[in-house]
Image 1 (tube, helix red, strand yellow):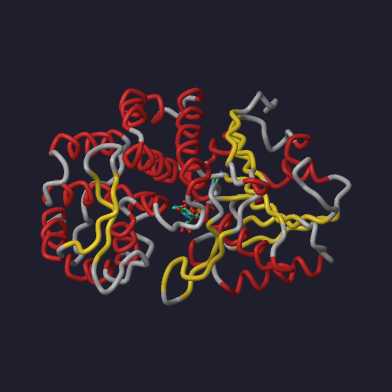
Image 2 (cartoon, protein in one colour):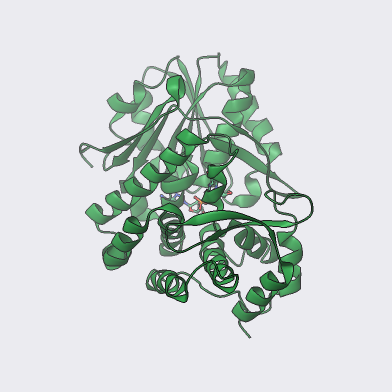
Length: 365
Ligand code: NAD
Ligand code: GLY
């Protein structure tokens, strides 16, 4: 597809600032992203699903460089330390110097692992994010959280390492399965629910256009979510405060993902159910109104996202998993709740009995 002028959002971090480009034909628009590469070496990190679809298009822009590719098998299970070791070996094989660049072509799994690999090689080299899922475009490719999973838990090892650029070519979404696309929409809704009520109202108005993947609505939705996240990251890069709000629904969601052994619910689906549970808990604690919960539930339903805890899940087990969340302090639950749409808040010392009641009410019989 011929490149069109992309939406450009700047993530402002002083000398480490970088652009996020969102539009069509960007993989083939090498003149734009090649300018962000400093040296002569590049390692393209992708996976066995995405590379056959898009590596060739990207590779045309790498002419004249010394480059190679390293492909992961597909799936969350491959976001592992062992694969970071293999990717680092690939950089060694390439003879990558300090000015080399890792290019992440894929969804959040590829992006997180590629960024962490770049953070480790020679104590930190450049990387460029080329997200190919909606979730990666609106969330994981922006903000510099990189890392891998351990058998003991998800994302337990990682580094803050910002990319040099994010190239979000929406042409790549043409091959994305509908379920993955909807999971990405959950992350868009999340941004609006946390801190941008007008954006939430816009999403309500555009729900059908977004379900139909209409260009204009899609580009605007991605841009608005990225702009919101870029602002938060610029103010609190390493999550000392405000950035924790971006985890609305995550404590519930991670527990649901873990209880389902990462096969029942996708990450975005866990976030969708988790946000609704957080809204119900907020209402129960007298922080928000039922009308806000209803608006969130309606938008999730119109987006065909799940809104209940799947049948067979044990609320007590979910609560136990929530106790392991990284945000907890001093043995008490610390959750992101809200005072209504666009007004998320960090709440410490949440009463476990209330959490359990919300989990019980939401579990399908
Ligand atoms: P993913 O990377 O597993 O991609 C989902 C599926 O879509 C995979 O099967 C993948 O091969 C396939 N795929 C990717 N692009 C495609 C395309 N264009 N066409 C067809 N198929 C395609 O999952 P995801 O939802 O993109 O990301 C989830 C990961 O992101 C998790 O590991 C999560 O922890 C991480 N994450 C990180 C951050 C962060 O800030 N770093 C934020 C949110 C999520
Ligand atoms: N996905 C949460 C964050 O980037 O902080």
